[in-house]
Length: 295
Picture 1 (cartoon, rainbow, N blue to C red):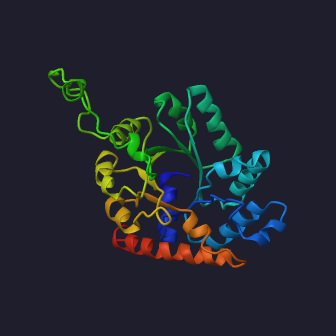
Picture 2 (cartoon, rainbow, N blue to C red):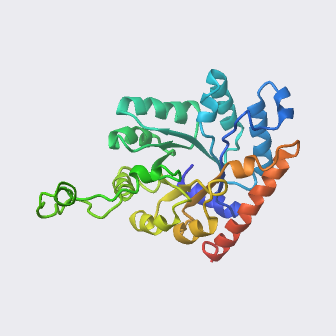
Picture 3 (spheres, helix red, strand yellow):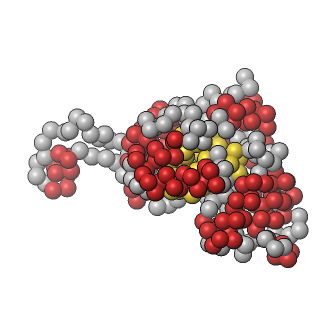
């Protein structure tokens, strides 16, 4: 799916909602256990109930990998069931040396026919660039994640070696290295560097909804890229804040909600409850689009 096609879908549906199909067999309604593939049946009913509301689905591969080969088959069938006009994201968070990343890219872009896959940039450019070789496909790079542990590394401020010597070692230091990104957080440097590996036509960045205050900085670095924003709903992220700080002229946001939608109900009407939860989120999205994009 191209960037322009994605934007057209957003305008058509008046939505930038992504539904995370993080389907746990232990949490789905018990009456589905009579099916040969309960997880697939759950996913199908969620998709049927929400496909006119959302512009993307994002299965997290861990929930399928845990079931071995059967889980991979369920994942593939889930992607096949999603309509062609809906953006399909494999939330796999892959990242390895070049030849291994090439195989990951083949797995998700060729075998699964996904539109996008999430990747970790920690190993550097050669771990990400194999994903960028596929025309019409997207690489979604982890920028600033929504989990509590993101503070362990991503929010650390970078300092020059001279400042490190002075403040930590007490050596008196020396002049700052003018080539160092002094004062930047690590996530800012990662996003700034990784944005040069691709373009706004084939790369996006993950920015967690629990960090709305960082979006202004991030938009200064990458004003034109789409951002995949998890953490709205169960993780406590504010949709209003994300829209305020993160939207650009082509919307620029794909807001993901997983548990808050797919587990909104636990009975035989679970799909209807999921639809109701999706519509509540979508109502706010529609208002935001009317105020910005449509004008």
